[in-house]
Length: 284
Length: 297
Image (cartoon, rainbow over the protein chains, first blue to last red):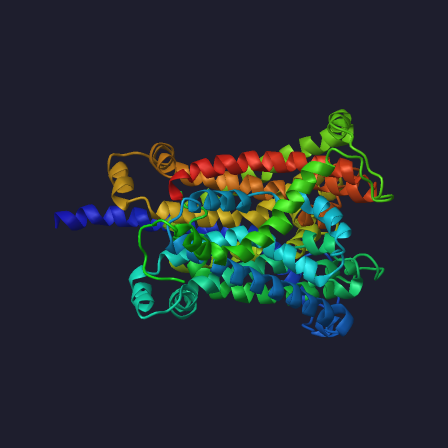
């Protein structure tokens, strides 16, 4: 009895607070949602302008207009090649590099990991001018492979850091058994460690891909030929060369271009968003 | 190769090398494409390298830096970078992220999921798309003015009157999710008993925040501020898409100034000097960030 009389006002105060929190959050979310609403509604609107408005009639004409080789397919394919290549290189190199760092003790581990951690937070934007100058010298400017290499290098520090943290979570005993059976380190990495840290590898892969997919400055600087431009750069064309901006088409293209990364993010959201928030890089 | 893990013995050098072998591809990539450009950056910042006539650039010592500090446009860019960073990352993303995270602690689950989803979508969207969305939002014919009209408040051409505020707001819109995630994780780690005990003792919301919550998550605050600042220092695409640094140079932060000097004015040496300064500032922040994480490695 005593408990319930004490409990009731306490609980109702709690409910009140929850409602207040809900209301506050929804108000903030509405502010965040407005620009997002614009892109979705305009993509479906034949007469889209710059203001959020519900279209008179839903139409897919904007999508029809942009789903053409030169506007959508080529840039998206270029994005896929650049980011796919960059991600593959990043993940393979990071997995290999993380193995000795996680498995063997060495006096070099700590300085190496500290250097990597230092590099994860350098402003990469700052080095794009020298990278451009360097790429001109070594004839890598305007090449897909050059851009892929740079993408991979810029993503590697974080990928190694993340990969090493995931690898530390795989118990060593399993491998030791394999080693006594005569497996090499490489075999135990590929057959035992990596499969056991599958979700971790997925996080590194998706995260690297998403970062590269959205990156504008790197391909903007390193690629010159229009045919090679990824979607992040070609989207500029809607403003520049095509004369009047057709906002509906721009919105439709934005939706197409953003969808893959949103879907991929949803795939790994739970691991990224949960208590672990980006693999210990921000633990504190 | 790989035998059982044993303490290092004589002749262990060969084995150490074999063990370190998997590091090679990553190290080569990092040296060639990251350390190389940084070293090259430190070199050409002291030359008068230009886009035209690459062949004969000469060493000019500290001239580029002297020019920079005398250059009004450079000082303007430093000032705007400062404004942009303080407004969008220190004040905006950080405070709003904390507010969202703490509201989420109390909110009901469906609201939490919905709001988290919206805020994170803004974060995951490609930089250029985010730029366009906010461009549409702030334009004269855009959504913000439509709302102001509807409320009978004076509307204005935001991108012309307050361009740095518009791009800062855009960066808040885009970057807040990160702080929200960091702070949600940190708040979840505070034991419930502590806040409840304070509540029973009659501590109000602000006092609890000031005396309990903030001290308990101070390490997260440190790392978050550091990472936000580093992120914000290197924002290029967002501002480029929204304003190109203009009108005039009223939203030209250091990365855009660097780009303009190096490519539109063809002074790679000068542009790189600016880049080097940016890199040095970033490195300082990076070192502080590592100190905050000291116990982790």
